[in-house]
Length: 225
Image 1 (cartoon, helix red, strand yellow):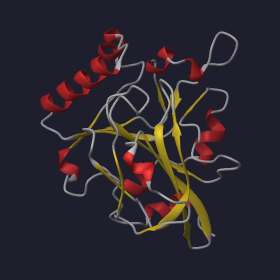
Image 2 (cartoon, one colour; image 1 turned 45 degrees about the vertical axis):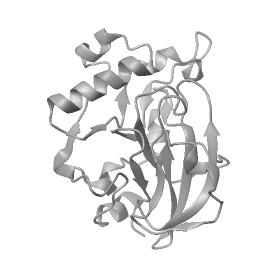
Image 3 (cartoon, rainbow, N blue to C red; image 1 turned 90 degrees about the vertical axis):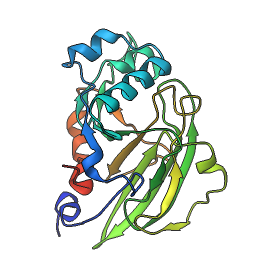
Image 4 (tube, one colour; image 1 turned 120 degrees about the vertical axis):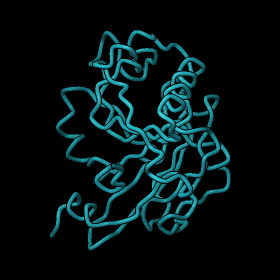
């Protein structure tokens, strides 16, 4: 049987953000600890964060900034959910972020049905979140869509089927999305175990090997150049 990564590589035209925005209007963004300019900003709140993203997109004449898979970040230090002095810090991002304005349509990456959803509240968390379950060539896996609008989960039901490319949700603003600049956190998950409406999107160095194995690079599917 093919590996999930090999299977994802064969799939074409998978999109998770407004299909009216072509990939030539996407630009990569580095939010890691190696980006000294970003680290020096010491972003403390969503207003600073949103201003940074807005200026970055304008400077690059782009509509979407993307990146972040397996990226070590310092921006999680403002939230207690990512660790404390008594636990190992979780600061390695294991999904793909797509930064664009609130209200942007979010699309189902592939045919699938709603496995679960939840409002994961708190600074630094996902806010409204939806997980889809997929079955392709006898493989079962999941996609996670985080930082959505509250309206996205108001009337959704477990088991509802979505076609590839069908609008699933819209992006939320900082009041509901965990106090971030608006963006989609998109993640592919092999084994969900007992998680419901949630799954870690940031891990510690000690757990990195496990999460990289269980969560393949989403760009293998999306193929953003």
